[in-house]
Length: 206
Image (cartoon, rainbow, N blue to C red; front, side):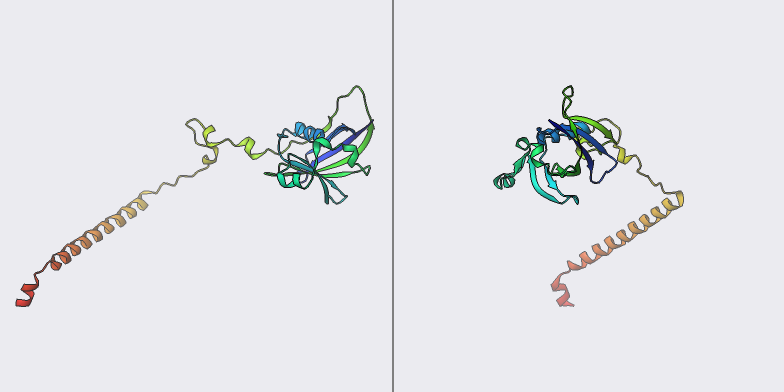
């Protein structure tokens, strides 16, 4: 039985690489789980492999946890699809999308075909280079998880500006002038209000 060695790399983080050996009769679900065991992501997310050409153009889809639309369309399922049934080229490529809600895109390429080693348990990680990028939901807690008296880190750089004495004096002067204007306005309003209460008969007698 043949063993496939796949090189898996992030499309946007090409310095992060995994090489995984897996038996030809194992499924795409086995490869899916092996990838996420090697990079530390949760495998229980809707994801898909796409049979691709040398330019990473997506063709047939092989899905894990597909939505209803894909199911009704008859999409192939990872748990039922053996790797050997989709290998037509010694350098076969698959475009792989993990977690359609917050997707990461990968390039998966067959780089070597080996003999099965009966003493090995497959799949296995042959090579690991670089650390996978963190997923936001894994590194930022919810507001309920933020405890303690300290401010969150993003407040540490906050700058507080303190006015000097001249600026404070100018501010106080502006405030006093504003108060004087309000008092004059109130006196004028009272006087005008008194005039509004004049007796119409007195006016006629004049």
